[in-house]
Image 1 (tube, rainbow, N blue to C red):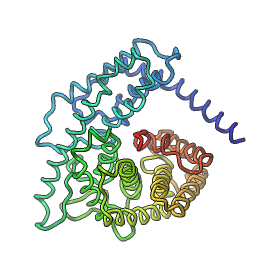
Image 2 (image 1 turned 30 degrees about the horizontal axis):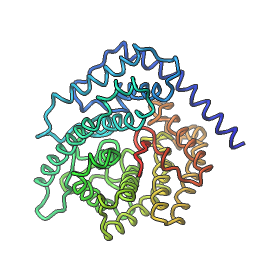
Image 3 (image 1 turned 120 degrees about the vertical axis):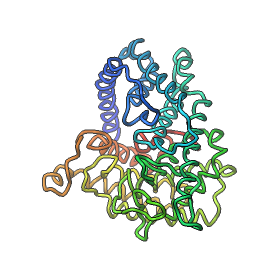
Image 4 (image 1 turned 45 degrees about the vertical axis):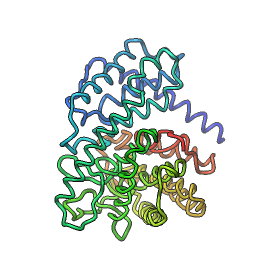
Length: 401
């Protein structure tokens, strides 16, 4: 039954891909989209994501006749317009527009995703995509984001009392200093950490100091405020991927994985490692306790995000050889995924709300389908699959160790 189930899942995903992406690329061609600013160039919320996925589909299935030469040109032209917009901007005195959901970190994710797949392309397509996948472009985007983060940190430091501990990097979005994965520090750092190590090597001290600062921002329960106002945290009642512990757990897991593969570059002190372990354990316990969220089952502010956070915590404990903790978090993820199978009944009874986009990946049931598939796949691979797993659109790039 396991092989039959996997075969059915693979076939269903293939059919979805064949039915949806060609329609999306038609809209891309008709729109002739050009961003007004690189703060609106993300994978998740702009045509950049469509262009990226179509190009990846072509790289992975060169024999397919789903796409025409005109489709490829539409995708590469959309990405070219993004790069032209970015090249015209200055980074010195701005700290806005870098977040994952809409901004530059979302664009960086797309570039990293293309880079992770480009070796599968034939030589002709690889040459056409070189201007999007070359290391210099990745370094340029990272430098832009870091420059803005350093400026934002200086602004933040000027607004807090003398002697307060401040991060090396801080960004804003709509004049608020968010901490979480969707709009804030955690999401931006997470995507940067998925870049090639030689690109991010000059910035590792700032990254580590900022992550260490984040471990001091959580409350006694193990959650984080959504944003900061000077040195005073705002409310921390949100416990979702977008705001709160789930996104933080994914950031910490990615840092641990990078440090595991490159201990000479990511020098984590013993006190920092101890703090990180304690912070992750408290955060994971809270995600399990409160992870059956009222806002539905999507990735952004629903149960699916909680499941992926617990899987990330499980992976980290496995790397640290804390196998009992790893098992506990894996079983916790399975339990939440199982509870989510009753989401229709929970919605009917008023215990869950209906999202604005109930079928979408980040807002609705498509995200939960991805989480169910992830759990199902891991059940057949002893719970860990670091090469091909993670939350879609955020934590699913294979950057190696």
